[in-house]
Length: 95
Image (cartoon, rainbow, N blue to C red; front, side, top):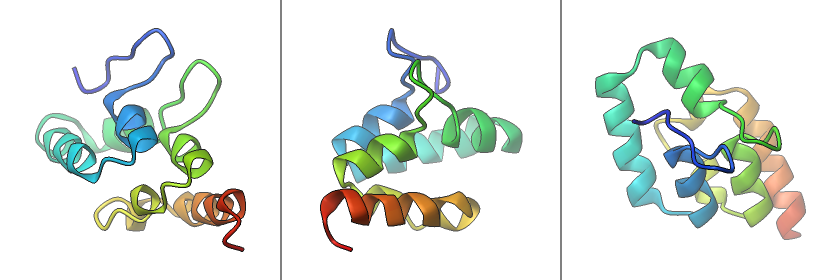
């Protein structure tokens, strides 16, 4: 269920990222740690792409949701998060 997608190719992770909802993000993260393998978490959840080829990180960056990109349990796992954080700052005009 955690890796299911809607008609846009979005997972629950994409939805939490676009809404900037840390509570949902945290709940999805906890469920993922309980139910998914490390591979599934890293490559299918965190770096899973939608129908446009966007990860949840892209969605968060475009929406200016820095707190999603800097989520304490996730950010350190993905070196690419630093890139998305920089993109987010640029999109939001903070750089």
